[in-house]
Every structure is written in structure tokens, then in C-alpha cells.
Length: 267
Length: 258
Image (cartoon, rainbow over all chains, first blue to last red; front, side):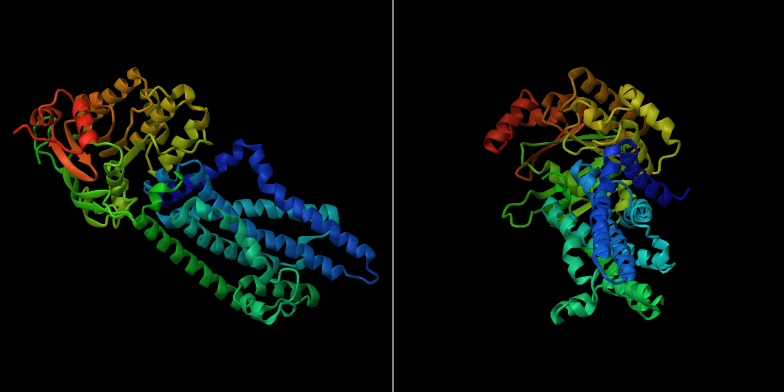
């Protein structure tokens, strides 16, 4: 087996070992998205009951958006938690002095994140089907590229927060949890772009999530795939991913120069 | 380069030249113009009081820290720009740097065997676990081990890839005298078998006298003395390294007998 694959496999296994042995960890992975999904889902059911006319489309959109937003958040969080696991257990230096390359570690974590996000999405989709009679695939196969792009953007955001963790250590941990909340109001997850004031629209237009959810709304309301948005989404995502990779390697160099790299997990 | 333990010529595995490291915002240098070499098969002790610059030197050699000035070559490569060529041939164990406490001993060693792409990993893991009396703990989580057991596991991980250079930061700090002796004998045997070079820091001066071929005495980042333990003791008319250490830590100076 090529050496890179062995090293990627080792980092992947390190995360799986943790899950395999701890039911509490599996529970923690599923708990927050499931709880959030249930609260919003039941609220949607209540609104439907209260409404005088049919609002089925809104329900389809809202539940789809909830699952989509969760893919984005979990993508970002899972990458940072993988790094934090090594910082919390003061093992990060052992990893940094091993012959793993940065891209191998990032790819291993992306694969693990994909596994985690895939499992959460499946559970949410089954819940939506069981509790609200909502079939995720009713959105159509558009959901797959939509999910892939949400995952990619979450991963790219994770790169930026990972870079800050390397440079500033535990002090940057709060950002890991806070980034999704900063991005969400501008991502037009539950409302169209025009709802935002002008200054906020400017920010929103820089985020691929805005176009992804605009596309989702169009698919749900018109049944058509908004192909014109996909080029913008893919372009922005590639830009963020490339920027994130550059940022991580820049922060790694800066941490090596300042001495922060040796203090990771020791603070 | 003369190898101090058997007097034979041996290639240098590590060359440090005028190493200077100043942390941002600090007026004084943590390491100030340090120059030394380490030959294949040699055991070199890095001594000095707290804050002498030992750990900064080790971190620079491991590529975790970019020196302010000076050069480091490990196996002829830079630990910063040619990191992979360097770290795949060395390994490290420290009392201060942990292994993932939430994995079992066997899981942890499998992960590191993967990171170092070790052939016949299971066989090697079993061999080193046996040598370091860890077999019975294979399925225990690392967090449940005593500090001495964890230190042995760190040594086990550090020996997995058959390193040519082993960097040890206070490796026997939490070991009982029997286990510390066993570890030293094991390391000496590996050194004899395959010319393993060891860079070693310790505050146990008795251990340093019996284990190291050569020592470097650091204080405030500067090299105060170097040579075999006997040479250094003779040079400074001291009865023991312990006495010499207390003199250096107290005054920051060494007065040469000559």
C-alpha cells in the first residue's frame, strides 16, 4: 500500500477507534442535530396546522434547509474537533513530529468528516421521513451536489479555524464553535436574499451558502434546477478551499516561528 | 567524527551550528549560539537548570521551532524544509508530551505504526510491548495507566520505527529505579546493535554520568562546558555532576580548574 494511504488510514482509524469504543461519543455526534431538527420540525408541523392555505412547499424547503445547514456546520466542526482531540489529549506534538504531511492529515480528517456527516444526514433523513413524512429525495437528485457543496464549504471554513487553532492554540477554540453562528444569518438559509438589508446582502453574496439555499428554494418552488447558480457556488467554494489551504500552511509557519507549535496542548 | 563510546570514526547524524532562538517579545535568547554534533551510536546528554534552553534546542531539532539564526542538519537535512526526510528516521519521547489518553495502548501503537508506515507492524508492536513490560496493558486506555506505564508506552512508540536518532526528554523521570535501569540497558543494547544515536536530557545526574558518552552543560542558553562526564568533572574539579549542577544553577558560572 502506498505510504500516503497508510498514513491517511492511521489518522482515520484514530478517530474511528474513539467512536467505536464510546457510545457516549456516538450519542454526542447525533444528539445536537437530532434535537435541533425535532424542535424545528415540530414547529413547522404546528405552523402547517395553524395555516389556512397549503404551505407544503415551505415545509419541504425548511426541512431540507435544516438538514443542509447541518451538513455545513458538521463539516466545519468535525474537522476542528479532530484537531482539538489531539490538542485536548496533549498528543498534537507527537502527530506534528511524525512523518505525516499536512495534506494527508487534512484528507484523512475530510474522509472521517464525510463519514460522520453521512451518518448524521442519514439519521436526519430517516427522522424526517418517520416524524414528518418528509422524503429528503423529494427535493430530487439536486440534493446531492447541494450537500457536496455545503460539505465543501464547511470543510473550507474548518481550514480557517484550524489555522487559527494552530497559531493561537486553545485561545482560538471558542471560534470553532462560533463560526457557524456568525455565517448563518448571512447565508440566507431560511429566507431569500432580498430579506436582508443592503449591507448584509453584500456579505451574503460572498458566501456560497447563499447561492446554495437560493438554489434549493428555486428547486422546491419551481421544480427546476438553478444551473446558473452552480458555477458561482463551485467557483466560490474552490476559492474558499484554496484560501483555507493557504491560510493553514501560513499559520503553521507562523506558529513554528513564534514557538506556539511547541505549546499546543500544553497551555 | 570520533564516536565517544568506542573511539571509532562515525558519521554525524546531527549538526547544530550557532543555533540562536529568541522568542517573540523576549529580550534574552533562549538558546544563544549553540554549536555541537552528535555521532551515530553516541549518547549525548543535554544538561542545565530549568530555562537553560534544553527543550528549545530539542524542539528546534524536531522542526517544531524555527531558529532565529543558525543551522540544524539532521542526517544532512533541514528539519524545517526537509521535514519528512528527518522525522521518518528519528523519534521522540518526553515526560511532558502525552499520547492520546482516550485510546487503548494497542490502538495508539497501531495508529503510530501507520503514521510511520512500519512493515510487519503487529510483530514489531508485540516485540516492543514485551521488551517494555506493556503486554498486559494492551487493552487498557492510556488515561488509566500510571505515569511510569505511560512513559514506557511513549518509549515503545519512540522505538517502533527503528529510529537512527532518538530524542529523549527526561525519559526516566517517572520510572522506578528497576524500570529506569531496564530502560537504560535496553537503549544501550539497541545502540550497540545498530548504532542508535541518543540525545538525552535529564535532571538525574547519576543517570547522566553512567548513561551518556558526552555531555553539554547549558545555562541561560549558552554552552558552559562539554566533554565526557569524567572530562567535565576533572576540568572543573568536581566530585559529581550533581555537585557541579548545583554550582552552575546557583552561580550561573563554572570556574575552570586550569
